Structure formats: structure tokens, C-alpha cells
Length: 214
Image 1: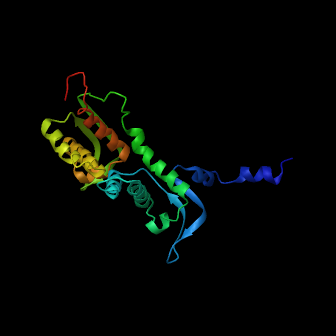
Image 2 (image 1 turned 60 degrees about the vertical axis):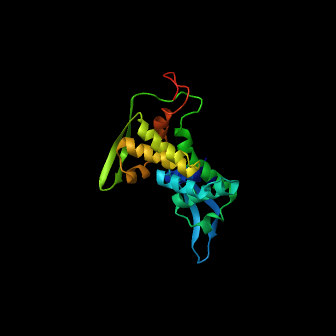
């Protein structure tokens, strides 16, 4: 005969259990209350867009330090979760670490392995489902090809700033120029799709290609 302890788990709401284990959702054992009485107990995150990543690079500044990089990670969590900085500052540190890992893996997993050869196919098409809504249009397909000299030179002007913000701004500009998408649409791209697009384009700039030095 089944005991109450055996029956209760079977009667639990499966949806509730699924929510508990959903990636990017962090439930605090002790809710956080900030000045004014607002309470926070569940941190909900999702894949960052290009805009979020760009804003985070601005926090790092011209000379990265351990402090500025940490502030950048905090900024990203604030942007995605919509939590105020006062609340995020009170998170247990291991929760922030886990949140940062979750947000970072989208781009890290999409970026090209430095040990692998770049994709040098003449063209690359990236599809978006759902499409990107911007400037009263829906963008579903991004067509890319090898950059020309003038486009590469424009990228170098950003790259020469030697900052995280400069490098990312250069990638954004490169994707915008070659795809023909407006900047507003590029900034709304999921960071994983953007990383793939940027890596494809900058892959043509890598030294040591079999077709000759560049």
C-alpha cells in the first residue's frame, strides 16, 4: 500500500516542477527587499540581444580591470532581468556567477573555435524564426558575403580603439554594411546569431589562409 509520502510527489504539478528547472530561472531561498519595499525572489533571464552585449562592453571602459568586467556582468544581468542594481547587488554571489554563465554561453557556444579554420564559403545565409521586428519591418533572412577592402577598412577604424566596445561596434557595423539590415535590426539580433554572422565576416581577415596572406 502506498504511503502519503509516495502519493504526494506523484500528485505534484508537473508544470510547476518544470518551471523550477527551467534554464535561466533562479529562485532565491530568501527574497530580496530593497528600499521602498519592493521584493524580488525569482531571477528570470533569456538570451541577450546585441544591444545588451554592446551596453555591457561600454561598462568595461577603455582599460579592462577585474572590477570593470565584474560590473559589466552585473550590468548584463540587470538589463535582461529588469531588476534594479540595488536588488542585483544583494544576490548571493553564486547566483550571479550562475546567471553570468547562463547569459555568456549563448555567445561563447556560437563563436568559432580559434583552433578551427574559418568558414570561407562565398556566401552565408542566416534565417530568423521569429523574424526581427525593426523600423516597421520584419527581417527573416540575412545574406552575407566576403567583405571588400573598404568594408574591412571601416572595421579596422573601430578595431583600432582597442576596447571591447570598439571591437563589438566594428562587428555591428560590418554586419550592418554587408547584410543591408538597418542598425536597429542588427541590435535586436539574438547574440548567438550575431556571433555566427560576425565570425563568418571577420574570418576572411584571418592570417594564414591557404589563398595567400591578408
